[in-house]
Structure formats: structure tokens, C-alpha cells
Length: 200
Ligand code: GAR
Image 1 (cartoon, rainbow, N blue to C red):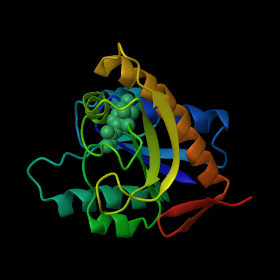
Image 2: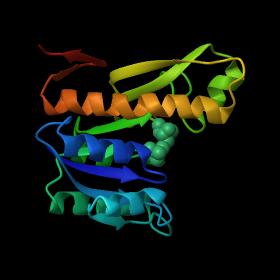
Image 3: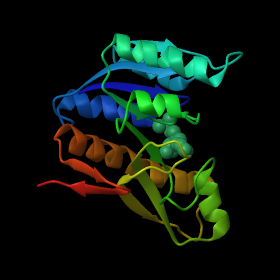
Image 4: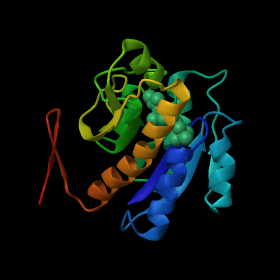
């Protein structure tokens, strides 16, 4: 499985994926490229430190379709067959989804369908939920919406701030993302409508 990782910022989920591929936790896989839409993304330096090829493809000043076409071209050049969104903060259009059908996954810091979109941890705190978490899911045309591969719950404590809650969710994100990619690499996943069924 040749992975392409798209990021926009810090890249801690990206680093967790790279380490899991290196250690063999995600089998039969390699990370072929890391692409960021944001030239300032901290994750770019991290990826380079792992010796992984990086590219910046800025979305500024070009249409969404053209931006996505450029990304698809670079992914195809490297024969990427699976795309991981790891803090990639742009909605993908239908053209991109169709280029990698059922082959794009995303991580989101809430128990979807609760709190899609930006600042999911802040939304959870403000709503007053007692349990939140993270979700790894296939990507479709709607925001934070496609079939769910797995979820991890995290308890909200009374003295939590956005930062403390985000940190605890992030720890779960890293292992959840690795576990989901391992299921995919081991060919354990079948998508049935909205449901992801695990094969034995
Ligand atoms: C993570 O918390 C991820 O779940 C979130 O952005 C953060 C990126 O951190 N993604 C979304 O909110 C997508 N809707 P990272 O760059 O350290 O992986």
C-alpha cells in the first residue's frame, strides 16, 4: 500500500503513521509523499526529518479544481493508492473523491456525527457533553461524513480546557489512525453502505 499523506499543520498524526509504517505496525505499506497546502506547516519539517519526500501545493490564487488536480497528478506520479488526510483542513470536491474511490481516510477529533467542522474539541466543551473522542472514517463529498472505520471515546473532565481535552483526544487519534490503517493494509475492511464491516 503506497500512502500519500495530506497535511495543513502540525503533522502529529502524520508522524504517528510514518512511525507505524516504519516499525511494521502498518504492514505492507510505505509513505510515498507528504503534501501540504500550507507552506508554513510544521509537519513538513517533521516529514523531511524522516527522509520522506514533501511537496507544498498552495491553494492560494487558484481554483479548487485546479489545486486538487495538481495534488492528484503528484499522487499518481508516485503511484499512491491510498490517501490519508492528517489535519488537512480543506474540503475535497467530488473530482478528488472519484480519483481515489474508497481510498481516502480522515481523522476527526470528535465522535461523529457530533461536532463536525472546525474546533470540534471546543464545540464538545461548549455543548457540555461528558464523552467525546475521535473518529477515523472514509471520506466522501460531505464534510466529516463518510463511513466510519473506528472511534475512540474520551471522557470530558470538569476542569478540562480546550487544550487539555485536545491533548487527550490527540493521544487516542494517533493509535486509532494506526489501527484503522492496519485494518486496511490487512484487507480486513468491507464497506456496506454507510457501514464498515470487519472481515475475519
Ligand atoms: C487533529 O486533531 C485532527 O483530528 C484535526 O486536526 C488536528 C491535526 O493535528 N482534524 C480535523 O479537525 C479535520 N476536520 P496534527 O496536524 O497534529 O495531526
